Length: 486
Image (cartoon, one colour):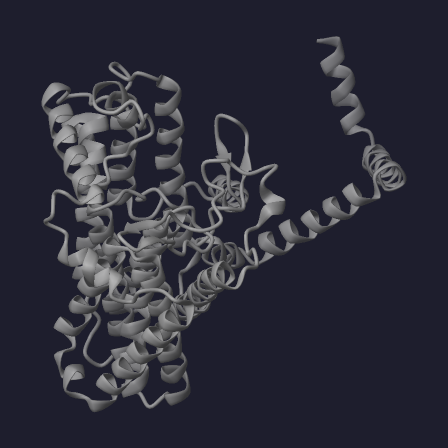
């Protein structure tokens, strides 16, 4: 008690701010003398935090730029920290300060509740988990997905910010695609494009220079993965970005914005080339479905010659790049044609994993085997060579790992997300927002289709896209609601 009273008297004295400032100055000077590089890093970090706190929308902009990254990370041994997590911490602190000033419920309460239920079912999967240490990080990732989504929903609150976010997404996705293409050029030309300087701090399971090979009779065909650790995840990311770009390209073409439409055609060609170099069946299928959703809602676009000229030019460019790199551009079609061949190694493994996942649901229907524990059951019971095996299907993952309650929570959340976006239909007099809503809805469909055949539903880019989709829906509802007359 005496110590506390001393501190209170010291804080109440008129000179304490000067003492704190003097101590801070002395500390900065000492740091500059002993570790000048650390001082520079600290000063830069302080300026960045100050800028983000003053313009919180830049947090979303930074997350869009980073959402195609996996390789830049810091491995703690039990958890992997990505740069966007630091942004989420800052966003959470700003949101908490705003809540203290004006306590209120978060927006989209129904979806927030669905997230919390999904998180809770993950915690309920502990009883039969072979390793509880794998459950808790996965539960944290679900929570981070909610924070990511909610940050975007809160900060992207105007029409102008939605359009800026989508333009930035197009640019970022094109940049990641260019790096994926350069990656393959380096493989052919003999120069290394891997970020080798990150090996000392990155998670070794995530640091991969180029994707896994696709084995054929003629040898191995390597697959681009850009800044991801898996070509299938890059394929899903590109499928969602291409779907959104396609919807915006159609709108800009009809609106007479030829320069923007031409850039989007170029972006589609670059992303399509990189998608081919991933050789990802799930990514290609996701884009086809996403594009199908776009043209289902805009059937008149199919009758325009400019569309087919753009498709022909893009296809020629993609095939040309593939030939220059020595990549068999028919390989992707061959993989699709052989999708029912159970003698194919990949198809056989996918089928075995799917059937095993169904068996786990039957054996552990209420709690599942524990989030992140699929491989720990599959390895000892099926193939000891694959203790880190995944289910290759996001819905199957949550039904098998967190039981029927967890699977239903996962499906319910996505049903509410899609329903929220679909029901917010802009008026016919607002073609811009109609294109935005259609593109984002189709992108979500593309992401889901890709995750039916793979599982990366907790990656940052998925929830940034979901957040942007809900932002568009909120703007439509807000603008269509009549305001009371004063």
